[in-house]
Length: 155
Image (cartoon, rainbow, N blue to C red; front, side, top):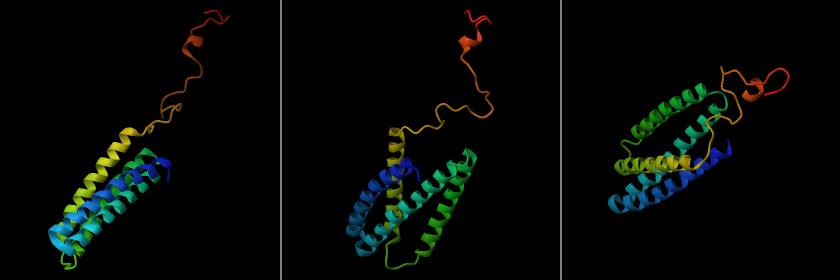
């Protein structure tokens, strides 16, 4: 994991945890203990799913841009399916309020995405390595001024 990845995960997980605490308090007041239990699960699910996606995309970015895009799409589809499975599995659970869980997941997801966008705007991450030549572009061996000189070295 690169330093930027740790900074992104940490910078998005902290506000999400704060939003989770607020969701637990609100859910406990509105729905009682069942609501609080549902709201406790929500930030845990959000942080785990988004952190896994960040790590997978980071790993794939070291291979190639195409692999990174494929990893992002596959991790997104798997996340949606996993959340769907989680919601279906907890659909008839009596120990938690599924509506409190759902609203807390939505709130925590919005906080995570907002924090991540805010961090990405402030971080200076190059999308092209400085000093490298893009694929398919011939490298220049000298400056344009030296190429315009006469063979005797005069300008």
